[in-house]
Image (tube, rainbow, N blue to C red; front, side, top):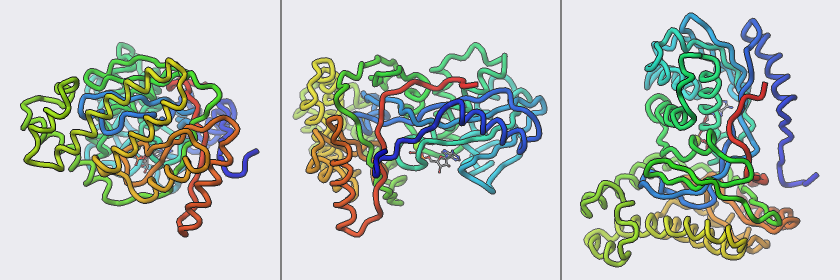
Length: 398
Ligand code: ADP
Ligand code: MG
């Protein structure tokens, strides 16, 4: 067993058994089933989703489990093993932007958005959560939570049977945006609900159509480096990046930056010359879209070195043009490559969270050790590591 790299042993049966038992005690009766939905990493294509661009995430083997029992009185009782003392009880009808607030909004928000279709009375439920995706690490524990709940309610409420997984993903996006107050562009929910085992998903964020892309590098692993850093400016910076992209669209006279994809880059940037900062943001988005498609091609050719090079170029662009990296992410990337990674980049929105490194199988410990030493040398909190394997989408486990 590795010393540094955390590979959780979440066995579906064991988790489902323990959760079912605990739920029976806590909620006062048996649940009807247990559902699980994965977190994700994004291989490449960052800050492209809200620009109608491309991204290439895959589902982790790390998942969030929910034990659920339907209620017929329109009430919700919600508890999580990761939020002890913060259980919530209320009615579906009262759920809104300020209610319940906190973590329970991710669960209640899904019920409330689904209630628009079939009425609040039908969406009552008792829910006990057990998350095995690290929280707040940029690995989308939030989508793992909302998606597991959405699938559970879909399976338990017959009136929802007409909804497909794309509908459930957009339900979760709305729950996160409108109830939990979290800005999210739709990549996370799509991959959590619609991943294909052993594949990354090429997502065209113009219409959220998906193309599975086989993971063709069996002699390489993706090492996730959770920097443990969380810079509080993240939310405001996310909003300001979106605003910059919208400004660019209005100058360019397009609805989305996707519309200038394929147009000569220098020409586009020339039209934005009055605002060099906006031009740099756009340069990131357009070059990142191209890198996503190049990485898909490199995977098809099994060219690990090219995959690594594109990851590095993505990081440079996020650091220099989009300016969403931070010292911890930069050091994680530099020290991973110095330790033997083929390439590395920040993943997720930035300002903390995780980086990913493409590592030849067997060298994970060396790479993790190099990163851990670099962090220790600065006196920073020790990063966490886990190995990411392209895994299956949300499903019912019991
Ligand atoms: P990420 O999605 O990258 O993990 P977010 O900040 O988007 O980071 O989501 C983390 C939030 O999601 C937590 O602060 C909490 O509110 C909620 N959450 C996720 N998983 C759980 C869980 N197992 N139990 C309770 N809350 C959870
Ligand atoms: Mg999230």
